[in-house]
Image (cartoon, rainbow over all chains, first blue to last red; front, side, top):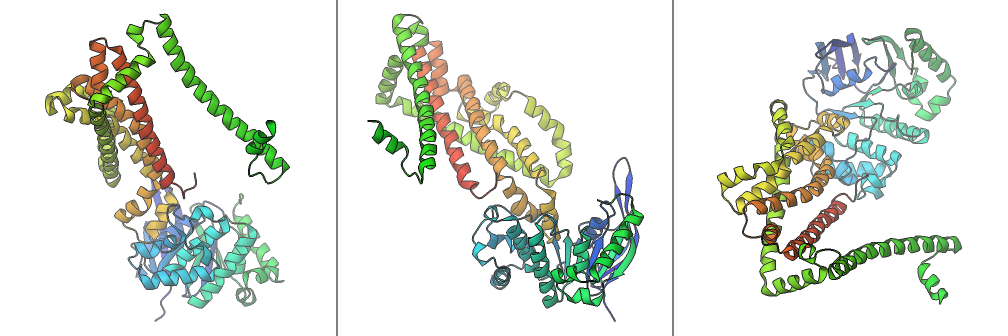
Length: 260
Length: 277
């Protein structure tokens, strides 16, 4: 029997407050295979981040069923790691103590896992920052440290909430490359939320286009093999890249008058 | 004569423009220092001269020489240090206990949103209430002595600390909490690893305010009940019309309060040296 990494079955989310109820998601269903890289794109307010928060176990679905590796999500899972746009490094801790934060919370911090985390830091070219504090690092370095912290818990599923949208273009390309290389080696599954269509196309195997309020999945786009296997920078320069990009762009514009 | 002065003002210069820059800034630093000293000297000298010339009544306003003579006399007898010791220990204890209790209370209401809503109006009332008005109540319940004065020092700092710290806990960036919760952090871990450390700058700001407040509480407390301490010396001096004693005690309080504030500032620099402002 085949177990999906993610299995969403008519999942909805309604946010309640005293005045009103806000429907964030129409019933959505999709499946993601282990090892797949899937992007969620769509205009702001279409429920992309809600989907990610549901996966992370931070909020419960209002109805429907959401399974990660065959297990229904009721709390944050140990097999998942979550990365945000903001690096969220703790200013009062050294880089060394920041990268093991996830391990600490999961009760898995020991000599071996700390050593592995340090090796990962070295792999990303940040060995010299081990004893430094976040305030001494540049924006790109901080986000790389955040990436190390995300990967140090050795997740099977990576949830990425616009992780590279606050860094400059060059750093973004560099981080994308590091990420895709890392994912291939570890055979991780990844779900990326972004409104950068280029990023979605150059990284993903499959793109889910969301839209509307409440949000729904409007279209699924399979990324051709040649783009998938190329690294993010090369993919951006391939002849098949532009037509797909335009297609995605039109897809988003046709449904929503306002695209930001 | 000018040459050595210029050379000294531009020491460590890397270039001509740097020398010019250093010279201007160091001259400005000097100006500030001299102006500060001048104010103090003018004040003390003005006070002394006015008292001697009879422009102000030396019986009411005393004079620097009289204050100094009294200071030497009381120091020689040793009684001054006794009074200073008592007041300082009351103040330090009051402000440490007040800050600690306030932080503990803030932690409690953070841990229970229900309790936070229940206690909210009471905290507002207690915060608005002038705490020194509670003095008589402390005296009848705790007795006229050290306990009452300490209670005053604590009462005046605890509520404001609670409100400041609770606000600080609430103000921690929600993204940090999302991240920690996604990593499976429980509420205790959330508090001890993220929320409390993130609030330390506000805790130090509260400490700085509390240094001043606890002096108010303790001095007023000593006015009301004490037979010892600087507050007692002030009120006693006033009652027997020994204004020299009042002035001297006032000056000592000013110096001690400044020293305490300075210590908290040093601690702040040490604790926050790695943080962005």
